[in-house]
Image 1 (cartoon, rainbow, N blue to C red):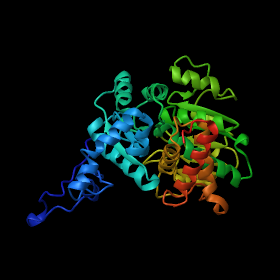
Image 2 (cartoon, rainbow, N blue to C red; image 1 turned 180 degrees about the vertical axis):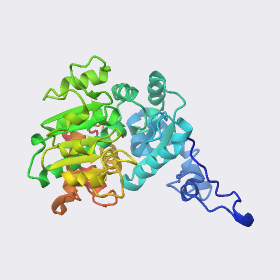
Image 3 (cartoon, rainbow, N blue to C red; image 1 turned 90 degrees about the vertical axis):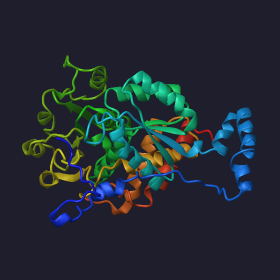
Image 4 (cartoon, one colour; image 1 turned 60 degrees about the vertical axis):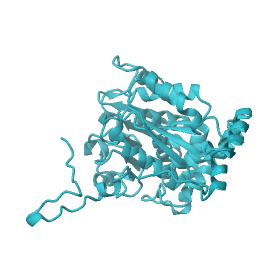
Length: 402
């Protein structure tokens, strides 16, 4: 059903009264961002330096030494936020124009929380080849690429090919940002219950971009075991209907050899991670292990309502801001890119992402409790901690260039 659009300028209601403003439309009118100069252009002397003839000296220097572009343009602190509009929030395939409000929002979050400039780029194509080719051609203007709201399985190939083609950080936030924040919350939940990551068996509902990335990331971080379920049940080696991505997932996950439904896999599990929508029946939640964790992250309706989850779980997290323990990507991507750009990293490695998760978990510190396993996005310690950890990890990995 089409969304009801309230025009704040329309006249409606009794006796010609003006219709009340819709605050969402009022905030978005004219867009949420603009370009702002960082140097003055007050007179002809300023103009001659900012533009011709002064700019020619800088252009010539960059032509002779290309690496100077990072010192004398904004390139080293600007990210392209690229989408094709095929998997936007909970809205799905709504196209590039309709995705722009989200991309603008992403860009202002980069600036607000990481001090990183970002430019929304919505592409009028869903072709993997065309998206890759377009981004490669745009890359000279940017220090990094944040892929956003591109549907699976195309998002995996697009990211892999861009990482291969470019020598700047490429990061699909729907995958890796979600995984980083999930790992941080899971580390603290385990700590709260006197366990380690290796003691835990997790079940993930959803085998799309986020579910696949979370599974791989948790394995990289050392979780005991993880199984992933899609609409047809647990992704396992005995299934013959798997896509190439899911076949790879079946090879590296599910050491317990589970098959069947998500509900059956949850029996005795320590962790539920929901990134799929839908609803998990209460008996399945009740069948989980003692001191379990329920991270039901679908928006706006979590797979397990917090009131039900709290009956059985030691720690409950959602993707919503009106409940404790919000798994929010804004905790990760601004600091990850800020750290990578700070040292002019050529890529974002697994070690850099794990460093980001560890730093995020450590921000909680002695305040750790069942309702506080992950900090607020507005905690001013978050971005500096993640930035520093990512920069240090980049240097240790040998991908830093300064």
